[in-house]
Image 1 (cartoon, one colour):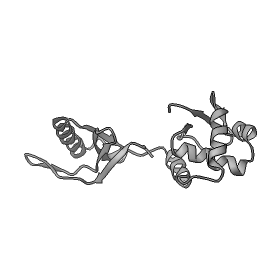
Image 2 (image 1 turned 60 degrees about the vertical axis):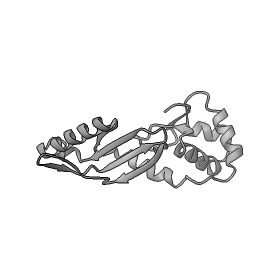
Image 3 (image 1 turned 45 degrees about the vertical axis):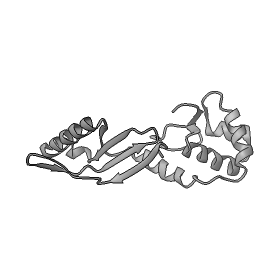
Image 4 (image 1 turned 90 degrees about the vertical axis):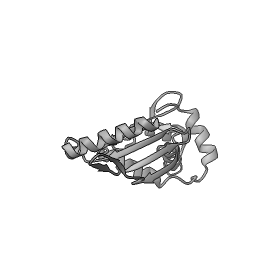
Length: 158
């Protein structure tokens, strides 16, 4: 969903320094060549001394390589649910060419999904196009809130 992934490798390598060893969770390369080393830990474990030491080792390795290091924790549950929902709309829906132009033309400023449906047409045709545009990041909304007819939609930058 991030959209700029060239490669993503799980548990890519072993970092070692003195008596310490750590395997980062992911290494991620973007389409513009940036590389990010990523560790994922539940929030309750972030302050454990062994994890702090692992993160410092990853920080040092990333810095030496000119990469970024990021530690991630739990995502907002609505965000996860919304991404799962939107992922079903990856494929181009019926009447996409016509409806997407109408939808984008009606979004000069943020407006609700209900208004988009009212302005463009049949909800059964409009909603899949909106969700496809959201998945492909041609439209945006707050993915950390429950989807509804009142959710604001906008075009342009997230």
